[in-house]
Image (tube, rainbow, N blue to C red):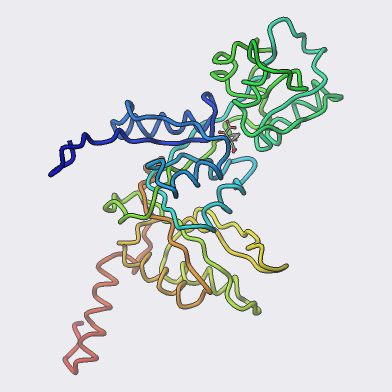
Length: 326
Ligand SMILES: O=C(O)C(=O)C[C@]1(C(=O)O)C=C[C@@H](O)C=C1
């Protein structure tokens, strides 16, 4: 029951790029278990855009979306969806190992597969295997790996493809026969997912946090990118990802999606963001949140909280005409 009301608290609703059996579904499951919310309602969305729109509209409390893959890089739909529209923030992240199987209707032989479907990111990770084992197969993109698998489930309408590259759980969930396992080209591939909600104050720092921002390019000039990076470098803030995306306004207009080690409550991160804000056309704060791998932040000498505090005390003394602390 919500305090002060008679209405029962609504169960929390979390969206994800569906249907059931996507890697995004696995990422949401992982985060909900870690948060002790594994009984929350899980709502599949047809696309990343649809999931983000439902959060913005208040139909969902938060949504899990793919952010970056260790082989194929950033997920454009997520980066663009977070760069525009009403602001959203990352509240949690998950890392999911991605291994693919080739699934088909029972009775299909590998040599009968003429058309394969899957998500574009998954296709890119299995290109080598396909070239070697199904060199003549055509490719049809699908909205997710599990959507491709679901299209081959018993009773599904004709899809125009014979096999799906998907997670083993999706092949099982949709009654497919596995024709080949571990068909990804890179062993140990991992995708990072983020749970995004409507803006709220970040959780307290844990010592192993990540901060995500999108910085919109200022007036183009020589050294612009170097100056942007310098905001972080000079404060000792390590970046874990920087990626440019076109803003869509005009050719040559870019924004930079940046993941930095640390929390907005850390002085060095705060100073870097202030510098970025002074320098960029716009900065969109996408949250400070605990890293899924728990890796503690690296702090270079002279950039810890005490160093920033000492520097501030020195400046205050100078400004007030007092003898500065040593
Ligand atoms: O289609 C899925 O299963 C997803 O969860 C999406 C997605 C992605 O967008 O990269 C997630 C992980 C894999 O790299 C392939 C596809």
